Image (cartoon, rainbow over all chains, first blue to last red; front, side, top):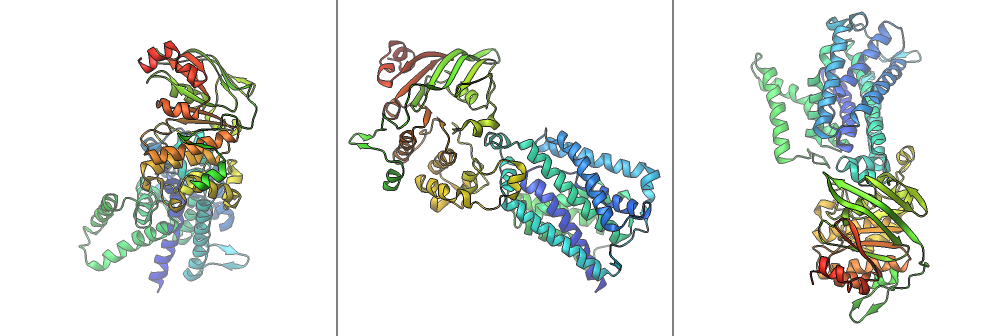
Length: 288
Length: 271
């Protein structure tokens, strides 16, 4: 049972990440590979806030949101000048820079040694020590993320994002300040990723920079490609498939030495097959 | 067709639909004036020191050979291009250029020669795009479309898109795509409409439908500018004509007179 709860918590965290990334890529067409960076900043805000500054979990969430929002606002201003492939390349650059900072700013992040002893969330005198309680809290946030996604999707704001992902110039002609929209969705997506990072840090109780590399951003990208671009349910199903897949493969009896490589190959093959046969993903409403 | 007639109230003649040449608003003033406008592309003057006026509440045929500068002029007047020099006056306000994001403010709407739609978005969303809330914060709060429902239904009806309203634009036929683009400008309730070759590649039945829509706008006193090569359509729909040649004004006036102009016949009509 603990095993399943562990999987469910990771599924919830990755659903939050996928929903926040799908707002950016699926709705806005902004192919960002920087999500792992914001995820990491959120995780480190919680880790440093709780272990060094003595802050409560929910305060560190706010800290992570603020740091991510400021960084995303500044970077978003730069990224808003780019489109398509260039946007992806510049965002990948950001991911690499943040990883390098986490790895090398040892006085704050402890570098590759990481930070351990990260506490659990508390509400009043209640602490979410048990995994079941933690899962409940993660699910509350996952549902909130899902509802927020659906709200944006239904709103005029969401319609503008969907228009600018295809034709930014035309959207501009329709009277929208498209750079502002791109900037706001980037900030929002970054802030939400930070929340997921806070839950990850608190759940695992130990973080190091290796969890927030560029490959994690590509993994998140894979989740929404498989589940479906511009789809809330697709984000959740994509997270479910990609989080469960290694566990399923574990029972297939793959040789221990090659299991990790085979897993990567399967991810790659899934992406390839999706792009060929179902480019909009399982539940997607948008084709890149 | 009957429904369109009811909505726009036009008069039909035996030789086909002819617009009412006396729309409700008074003419006399110019809604747009262009003075000494120049636009070059790699040293070639697409618009060459052009001075021309667009009279208010008229249906204006903007004609000329390919490369004469028609689309460039419309692109400048709708903010898609900035001119190199010159002056544009819209409703007595002088400016050196128009910003495309301010077209709503100027109550200007346009279609595109190549039919630009948001392909992976539904017909309804394509129609709502130019009218929905464009303040960023307010747009986040706006989740209901009921404020636009009446106009949306009317436009869907006029453009025969009601049964296709939930389809994505990419699923529509060429004719329906043209109608969707026209529907998008109808949603805007603008004062000035630019139609860039709205009839190209359309079946005669849809040509008639587009004619009816344009006549409907004229009957409401709107200023309409149509880029078109088909002279019979220009004669049917327009009560003013501007002819461009190599980016310069060749002639302007009522279509019957302009089309008899010797320079126009030689340079454009080739007769």
